[in-house]
Amino acid sequence: MDAFGEEIAAGFREYSCRRLGQMAEQMEACMVRLTDAQVWQRQGVHENTVGNLVLHLCGNMRQWVMHGVGRQADVRVRDTEFGAEGGLSGAELMGLFRGLWRYW
Image 1: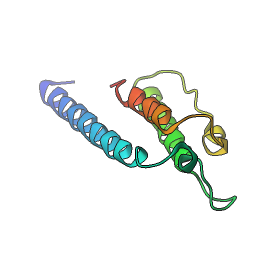
Image 2 (image 1 turned 135 degrees about the vertical axis):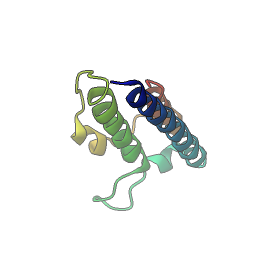
Image 3 (image 1 turned 135 degrees about the horizontal axis):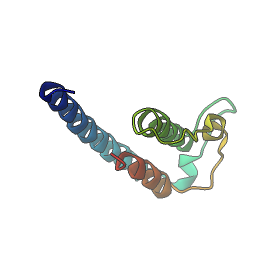
Image 4 (image 1 turned 90 degrees about the horizontal axis):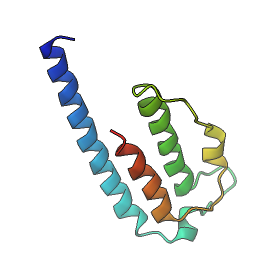
C-alpha cells in the first residue's frame, strides 16, 4: 500500500473507532435507564429483548471486524444471540460490547 492508501486507511480506522466510541456512550446512556429485568423483557414470543440486540451487536463485531478484518477465528453462534433469555446484567452486556470495540 502506498503512502496515500495508508493515510486513507488510518483516517478510516480513526473515524471508525471514534464512531464506535460514540455508539457505546449512547448505548450505555440508554442501558443505565433500564433495570436488568427490562433488559430481558419481551412483550411477545417473536420480539427481541434489548439484551438479545446487544449480544447480536457483539456477534456482528466479532464476525465482521475481528474475523473479517483482524483475521481472528470466526466463533459466532448467531442463534445463541437471539435465544438468550437472561443471565447477564445490563452492565455486563455493555462490558462485553465495550471490550469488543476496544479491540481496535
